[in-house]
Length: 273
Ligand SMILES: [Fe+2]
Image 1 (cartoon, rainbow, N blue to C red):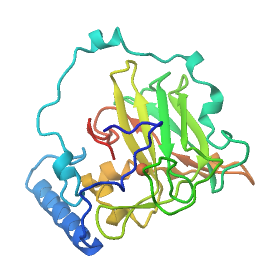
Image 2: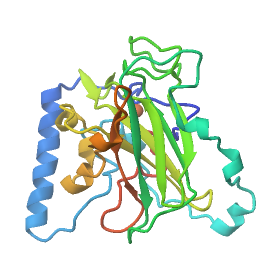
Image 3: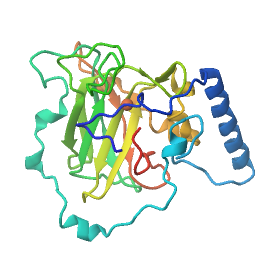
Image 4: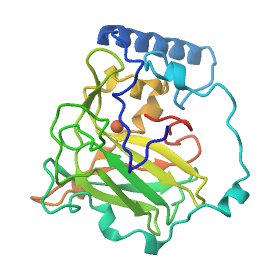
């Protein structure tokens, strides 16, 4: 099941919820990372993509694809797929703080960055969508039963097109961390989900942006399912004081690299976390 901005599926509803403790999950993460590091020392290749069957991330074991993906003819699909142009996306859709009659609660912030190809060239006019929990760590989706308050002034979805320099920009509030049922007392680090369409509708990636210094990083089996430390680091935005608006909002910067060795980790097709 694919997450989409209109059906913000959350990670806490999995029927494979376990009673493992955080200590057990953390030990499994440590074992997997040590095996990876040892493998690198003896010449194993870097693994900077998500491990689709990462044991500490319990539900990934049964849900990951076991067969090769079906490859469709992209040109044929393009004949029937929607495409986005400037007239389809209004500027106000990039501001998640003005979608209701009042202002949402939370820490106002701007997040901006560039969508780049593997050679550092800007990827222009691409549709970037975001969805996120509110400041209390609650999604508006009805399946999210986390007992934190909904915010009547915050839906948590937005979209924009990248400009001539590949720049996207959103104004929003900082999402809160939230619990999920991977194991006992499991919490997701605060994150914003990003979807980027390429020049064709068949080219879509989904990923997550995190915030610097989150103490939940070492405990989170989703974040830690990326074995390569540099690839994990690339999912963390940097705080940029030059992006702040005095007496109004903080600023974070995060680039998305679509290809190449500095590629941003993306979720596997068919994944829903
Ligand atoms: Fe999420």
